[in-house]
Image (cartoon, rainbow, N blue to C red):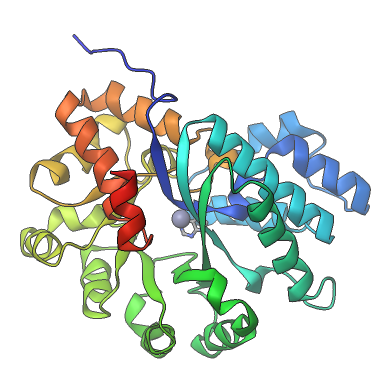
Length: 323
Ligand code: HPA
Ligand code: ZN
């Protein structure tokens, strides 16, 4: 029988979460109303109904539509503050969230206003939750645009821990973005990339070749034993997102999720929320769903929590404090 745990009480990390994906339907409608933006959904309930996704690109269409309601500096402050409040109440002690400035039109709201809003919410919540910021870019756009996004963030480099890449994966392998990842490295950043979510193990292999510090998702690696061995030897963590995988049909059923098998082979796998508002699950929900489907042992739960600290981009001294 399955031991019952209250995963809200477990001190957790969330290392793979998109700020834009924490926009709850109620807040989305509130911002749309105050910014006079028309939406394809009548009310929050209709949006919940639209959150039955066929695949990653079906989800991304809704997600980019949702981003259109983020217009003012206040919107970005409210969004960030509300997410940090919810994560803290959910028992997340440290979060590392992605934000993609490419999504937002600079003529609508200058980047400095967005960044000021996001970082002031982080500052206002710093007693409640530890937080690192990660820039990310879209793999469906030209690599020149990724390099431009990296340049545009120059004034905030001291507040940025890492750079990543996401978006529709198939047909957009990581290797095409080598100039971007090399530039990130040269400027002193950690790098991570979404790979092996819908894409093949070969994309995860390319991520390893790019010398990434962390792989977001990485599910497909389960099909390549040599690659699995490399991930163990190089200690490259995977930030897995079980409920996201279920909602985007990356797995048919959570009982098929590779997380437990990877853990038993010694991979540094972690549990994360990805886009909690759209996938209807925050960090603790992901832990509970995995536990219910895969019946985690106490040791496995402990290992997953430790992995969250090990895999984080916190400085070494701070990691030791958490452990
Ligand atoms: N995959 C790729 N891109 C994304 C995701 C994801 O899960 N969430 C937000 N952007
Ligand atoms: Zn993601």
